[in-house]
Length: 245
Ligand code: SAM
Image (cartoon, rainbow, N blue to C red; front, side, top):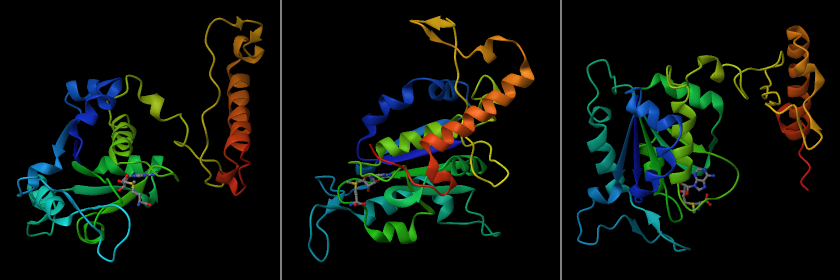
């Protein structure tokens, strides 16, 4: 699977995607990450990628032309579909605070594509014609505003990459974790609490049940703890509301 990241800050990715499982997956040839500088598709001597908004208002807007040229050059198959109308199994995603909330199911669904292009917005956002004509999905990583789409793009790459078969040493890791399973009502389940040695630190004890070796009991305890945690931290998942401290 190939991830293309289109950004005006390509050096940003030298940090976040160079630690942990993602670089290992790249080294093993399981994924490829290609970071593209949007300014490479400008034609003026200042390499301009933004301009003032029509209608007035604050800030600058990412221009449609360089984004169009970049996507056309990185994923030409999208502009010249074959006889069956196939666009080469590609997906173009805009990171946007106004997008659909990116969830584990979206990460999993992305595995079906051979190439995914992540477009990182900046300034006040992108010219809406990019969203309307060049993008398949608009994803937000949460209900807050960041200064650019780079961090969200790195998050999406990480979330998808770890689901690519072979990337995690233990395939079960991504089968039994938060948001990978749902209860009988289809509400996502969260992971259970984990503990490791020492069993007693500062008088903080590991629950006895985990030390007893009764696997059926441990399984029941973990399921109950996962539900309790969901109730406490994510009442919104079951239709409740969150108290803010
Ligand atoms: N004016 C926009 C708004 O109010 O929704 C915010 C633009 S923000 C300063 C600049 C860029 O950061 C956006 O184009 C987007 O690519 C990225 N961004 C900011 N918050 C984000 C979020 N929660 N999820 C995904 N991308 C985000």
